[in-house]
Image (cartoon, rainbow, N blue to C red; front, side):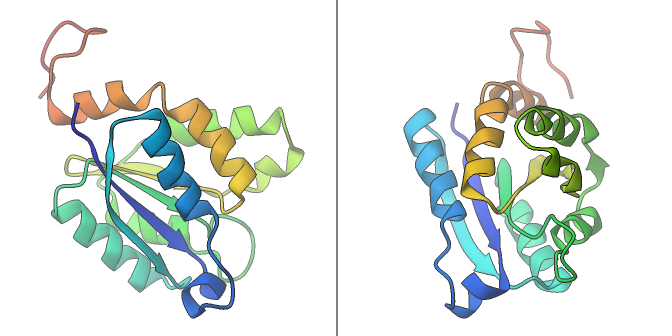
Length: 167
């Protein structure tokens, strides 16, 4: 299954060059190691709703199957990734973030502070991941087994689980 992915790091410090992004490259490395998916878009942006939303919209419009964001999902005043994502998505997918938070709560109580969201725009699935490299890895461990099925459904392809085409 050819899957095209975008990875968007949201961080004022990384965007300004003050801090080297670790989570974005980690997402790419995990996807390259565990899947045959292609990361065709990768960028780092400041914590600005309009800038984040512009990347998400443009990347969806180029036909990406999946966009994973990292950073900007907490309580800090400049954490606005969920707000930008909500502006862009057409259909929310609350089960994804519910599952991620539920599993993360088994590791740290701080998981309840995540405001991450997920949803669909056109045929692109957008998922907000935390900024912490450790949390990114833990979230991807949970997500990766489920994503092929989700992305097939979005494409309207036959699914072994359903045995029919969904449009």
